[in-house]
Length: 505
Image 1 (cartoon, helix red, strand yellow):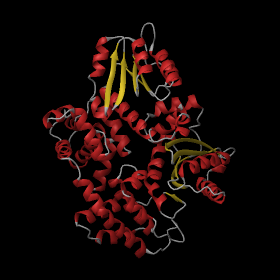
Image 2: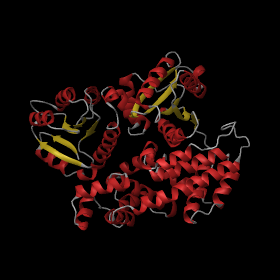
Image 3: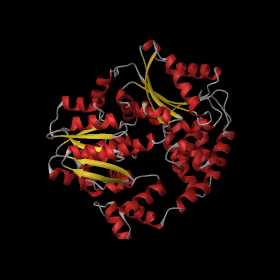
Image 4: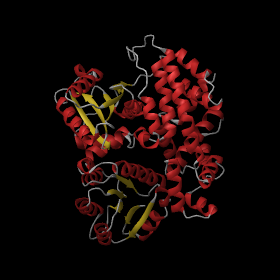
């Protein structure tokens, strides 16, 4: 269990925070909820604490002073500041002192839940960092970079934080890249990071964070439009590094011109990162109109028809074979593990299969390639993964199946981990732990994903008003729903419905 501390000089606010969200759904125990900031500080110094939520305006010791003292003693603690004042100076000071976020009163429970979810994911990823990187990677710049690439911050807040850090959001372009080195170890990745930093001055600016000790994620921006050929630059760096005995794989997303679209480039790079286990030194993401939909349909048809391959055959006839192969494989791997770097631990037998991935001589050139080789490889990979996927689906505890079934019935908009645990005669903490172990998701994250997907279904197949959809699926406000939907689907609910209606004509 993670541990959180709540402190506000108003007892009603403290009680409201305690009951605002299902803390056990995030695997969090409330270690202390108090109106005394000194008691909160003493508790944090004497006990393991992961998250502190503090009011900015308190007597004797205000929230900014409190987090400054906590951060000085324990830099890894995540702090959230509450404020009734929408004031830039409060925000700037809080961020400088190390706060992860500041929330305005009156508090929106969904906003708090969203922030806690982001922090828990951040903690889980940071737990994988080794001691060498641990302290240095907890800086504000690296935390900001992670929030930026993963679209965990609004454009207004992103702009504010970038200004504080001196990051140019008007650069000619932004390219997200995932560097990984599962076979070379942490020393190899450290050497590569130092090597990469030597190449950047005068050409590119870079912002990075270590998602794991063996996985470096960054966004590169050229200093001038003349340096905008990021693909050539990265290929040169990787080739030069390899000639110096530093072998690292890179998965590179498309270059985007708008800083607010960087998460799209990261998503592309992240999806292709599994190709590290092939013989490729790097991969540049290439998208073709209709490819994603075709690959999804081919894979669904394959699963539905128990391995029948007609849909896959059509996919490889219509598209560049290697791109069709990568798209299908990325979707299957996503079903087997939440992150590609979990592939080795969960399904090592697939690693050997990926090492046999065929390579064309003119990679991504769009020229004729050995379609048969890519098709046969994809089919073999899917058949090898079939029993793994079946075991994963069958291994879920009956209570987890019951939770998932209840969620997808969408008959109870007030569903919560507490109410489900009561029905199943277990504690919320136990149910949350089992659910996370079996699905890889925290309950609240899974519930939000399911609700958003159901909302998308209703938008496409019904004429329900958006406010009615929001009420039906259980979101507390339409504003929060709109923001969550856009983050998940890369488009607004209105645009999603319009595009689907046009596509179905």
